[in-house]
Amino acid sequence: MDVLISPSILSADFANLERDLGRVATADMVHVDVMDQHFVPNLTLGLPVVERLVQVSPVPVDTHLMIEDPDRWAPGFAEAGAASVTFHAEAARAPVRLARELRRLGARAGLALRPATPVEPFVDLLPEVDMVLVMTVEPGFGGQSFLDVTLPKIRRARRAVEEAGLDVWVEVDGGISTETVERAAEAGANVFVAGSAVYGADDAAVAIDDLRRLAAAAHRHA
Ligand code: DX5
Ligand code: ZN
Image 1 (cartoon, rainbow, N blue to C red):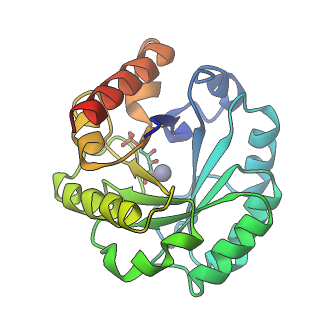
Image 2 (tube, protein in one colour):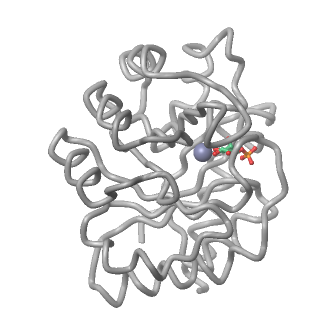
Image 3 (tube, rainbow, N blue to C red):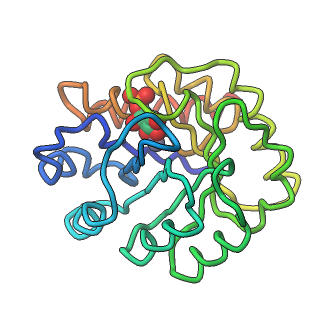
């Protein structure tokens, strides 16, 4: 299972986004949190900014849409060239149609679950997506503590993917650090979002390396 590190620019300097994308050039992707102040109580950035980030990013852009009505707004992020577009299961009206549309536009389609949303109702949809994002904090803000109550769900998501014989990535987002990354990896996550742990470090490249190494070792032991 490949370990992929996706630093979240929510913890970057919003006045210096291009510079801060450069700080994470050794990562596998860069995670961009789009929030609309309705689905979550925070507002970040939208399509015009993502269009520019895609143009200047040294690594593929992994968008996480914490927005209402993704059926209407998510395809625009695929058209903008985001490598991955993840929408929330709680917000999508027609998740299968939306995932197919994102793939048709050339993006990987991701399905995100808030901490209290079970994975079971979505197991039959797994062939339609490329990634399941298990939120390991309540979405909305960086710098929160990892919720251990989400570990069984990470495990169930990974098991469902394996039982279906699919190559669907399991991404975790929220509170990922050198303290928690091994627990998430042992449970079956292979894509690790980290905001404060990477951008709060003196050397982001070292932080990325540390997370990658710990996650890979945890997979070997799992
Ligand atoms: C929170 C966002 C996360 C956030 C994670 O709703 O989805 O991507 O940036 O931040 P950390 O890694 O600091 O918990
Ligand atoms: Zn996120």
